[in-house]
Length: 309
Length: 178
Ligand code: SF4
Ligand code: SF4
Image (cartoon, rainbow over all chains, first blue to last red; front, side, top):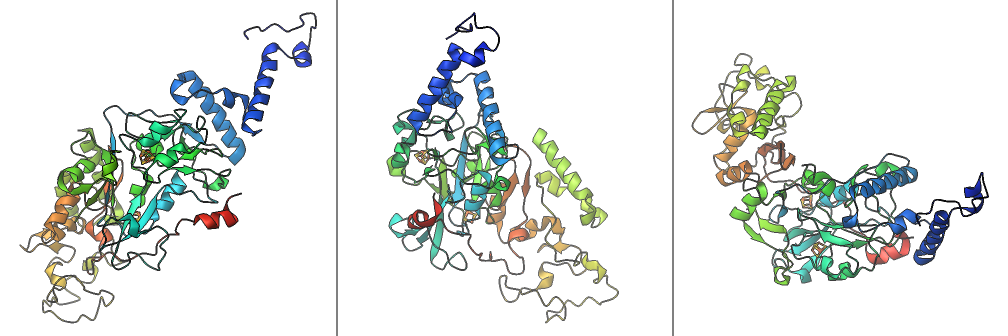
């Protein structure tokens, strides 16, 4: 493998292109195998040989990021930055949503799609807002996600947006056969889109319907691409991988609020550091009536629902 | 400490905005002490300062409760029927509001006025549980005043048209996915 000598030393001048080195030969062979295995001619040799994100050295990550950025440039005709910001020390993110305020306007759903570069047709949405009966309380037997009246809130109803709950004991991570999804130190559950094999076990395991699959090549107009991305977050995804909410990892690791918090017109969405006693998230947890969705499953969400009234 | 400093800086910038020049009194510190930055109150176009009409000369102060000839766009739907303008607006200093005690309050600090009755909400708002904060979860944030979301004359949050629902799976199979 490390042999840099041409195979036929006597064949001087232009030998490499004429016969090719052993390495080049191997490379082509691997690429051919990659093409055969994946049935996808677009997968490059580098991509095929790439390791799990958690096993990569700093240099390897930089090389991969450079490759991705040039691929995105070619595909979208504009510069897309792929960030690799690590978790901040002393931070575990928490989220709380005020069920007494949310009016079900879905501003958050669409701000999320824009921010996180989801496929537009069909549109993948990471947030699903459930319309529920006030009389029934939180009861999935009486939940409707396709509601579309002239105005919200509708009389007698309340609204419960559901997205990835960034579980402390995430079943999705447990079932992944290749370790393509894991929980980061700041509590965000991420997916390595280059390692995901698209088996969708995690989708079956997640009790919150939080994971979504790219059945087709994700579609996005160049103008719609958000160029500020994170490797483990909103960078454009390939076909055949699973994706989910990452608390806007590309924003929150830089100190910004997630896009859904910024857009919500009712201020129902609260976000912050669970380890900071002064954060609004801690204020909510300490002073309000709080519950975890499907608490009985012991997934231990770091996403909470509360009643602000 | 740093964050505090940034708050002060933000406030200084805010107060320096010519758009909200107000009176020189606007330099009063309470808002800064709270570390709260708020955008300009949502006045109707051209309405502020109130003293451009209510200057005590063009019009006599009339403190009697009555139907007004002006401000007909305002529909007062806030609390008991007996409530009216001068319960909150100051008759003698029109560019201010006042508390029940008579103490004057700037429009930029109207939350103090609201908090007289809605003390629980004010308490929640101060710690970020009620209302909306934007900016940075670990740094400077922008707050909204009560009146940015609740029209003080008719405070109930107005219904909105919801944005489009997700596609049903059967629709996706028909057209969407390729
Ligand atoms: S934007 Fe806010 S009010 Fe609207 S649906 Fe989302 S959480 Fe609810
Ligand atoms: S909500 Fe679902 S996708 Fe998110 S961490 Fe929990 S199990 Fe995994």
